[in-house]
Length: 208
Image 1 (cartoon, rainbow, N blue to C red):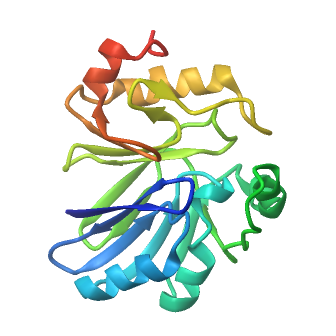
Image 2 (image 1 turned 60 degrees about the vertical axis):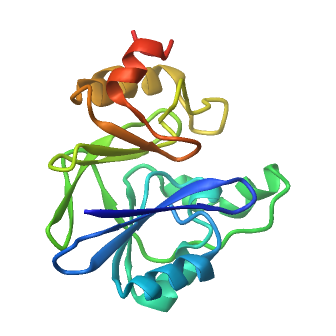
């Protein structure tokens, strides 16, 4: 695995380009904005974008998905249960006084336990609802990395005062799903800096 991280858009979302070294196939995780910049980086690296994976369907994490899909033909993947959010992207954006966001088009839904393959990389889908109804995290077991979206941040968790959010569900996702990963697992979140599962168990008050 080779990893590039781009901070995109006015809301400063972490967008990740994850590439297989042997095949040069790549996945983009949470392309929140700046499709041109993400596409230029892909071209610079000589990668074939196979998959766009959305950890959840909030507008700030998928604003560039439609354009990237048009440019590359990549498949768009999202967790089952996010369909209602996908149907109200412009309303989501308007609530935060942000410009409208295009629906990404046809999507493939996944659930916990599914695998998403990109070259030799195997993303294990972990169901982590709470911040949104069908939120997912993506675990690369052999690399010791989990992409947590807005479920887990350094010292905090995603907000649960949005439509479809559920605080109790988020705590279950945190403690039962992500908390079961090895302590040395790198956590690459949707915002701010990376952390580890072990560090969060020590410092994060949302871990029980």
